Image 1 (cartoon, one colour):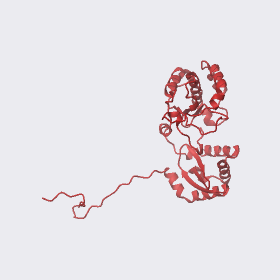
Image 2: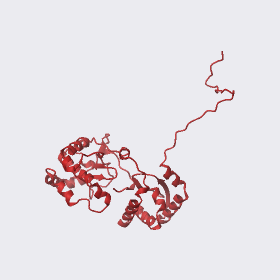
Image 3: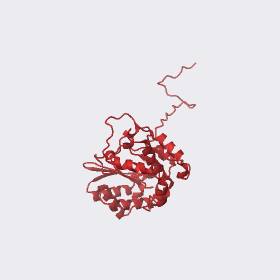
Image 4: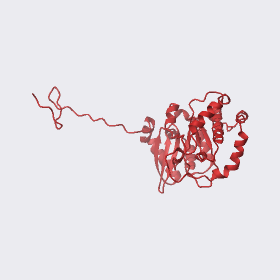
Length: 296
């Protein structure tokens, strides 16, 4: 009988020749086919040179195939790191100039121009199922003092008739802690994205002193935006129509909620996150880069 092969032997086939060992390598993570191909193309290199000339600095450009963040950047001492959706490879000179102005942080005109350009080129954005888009977002619901999952469920149940339809597909979570100086000049207590159908609540409301009724009021307001999400997508500039305001006033105690906000706005503007992170949702750190995302 032949001996069993040891670990140092190479297995041989029927011809007696050693069999080739095939090693399967794990594929690298990429930004999608379009982003990968564009990054290697001359168009990306040309755009990188254009931005460098407009910014008077060295630019490290990476082209993506993102579905949500169209523009993001980080400015260092000697280098700008810029990430752009591949739609910008075909942008005209005027759009590139406004893009450079946006990166420098100057002017409403730049933001408006980029907004229009992204809307006109939405067909270039890869379509991803809503549930997959939401899974990529950090949406913690359990806070130190309040559980958004419970408050969201009770608000949807109690006001289903006013909201006009069963609330399906909407996700909610605490917003990341923004890195801003205190006191703030303004604060956005709640937000809704028609593109991802996600509601975010500012972590300043995750305090025992904030009544649950007030948080439910903020959630109700954002759910009304979900009902009228076509107004957000139309970008008409009117997001609080007369019908929106009428339905908003059907919330019991809406005047009390507004008065509470007015009395405590200075307190909320001065809110600071707890010093130590204990793993709860509202303490997640925010990004230090500016970003332009797909507008609903």
